[in-house]
Image (cartoon, helix red, strand yellow):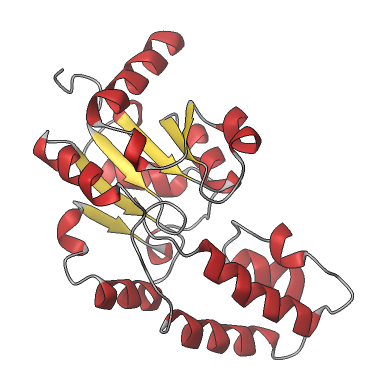
Length: 223
C-alpha cells in the first residue's frame, strides 16, 4: 500500500514515545502531599496538564511555590529514565522507510529535552521536527501545537496522524482536524475511546498500512 493519504505522524513524548508517566506520578504525588496534604489524589487530577497549567491553577497563590516546584522538577527530570515504549523504534523506522515524515510535539521544555537527548543521543535524527513548549503560545488541548507542526513539515492537517495518550493531547489532535490514534498507556482504553479514531495498547500492534487506512477512513467520513 502506498502512502496516498498519510504524510506525517506527530508523536506526543511522555506516555507515547518514552515511558515516563509513572515517574511523574511519583513526583507530583510528593509535591501535592507536601503542599496539599488534605487533598489526596490531586496528582491524578492534574495528569496530562502542562507545568504552567498546574502551577497557575493550583499553586499560584502559594508564595515561592513555583520556584520550589520548578527546581524540584528540573532535578528530578535530570535523574529520570527515558525508556522507549515497546515497538516504538520499529514503528518509527518503518515510517521513515516509507517516506512518512515524523515529529515530536510536546509540552516539555528545552531543558527537559536536553535530558532526553543525553539518554538517547540519536533521538533528534529520528524526527523531521521536534516542537517543544517554546514553539507555541497555547498548550494542549489547543490545536496550536499540532497545526504548527504540520506547517513546519509542509503538510495538510488532514494528512497527519497524531499519537497521543492524554485527554488534552487527544482533544488537541481532534481539534486540529487530524486523525488521532490513542495509546492506552496512561489512561484506560474505554476512557479515551471517544476522543480518538482508534485505541491501541502499544506500538507493537501498529504498522504503516494500519495508519494509512486510519487516515483514509477518516477522510472518507468527513467529505
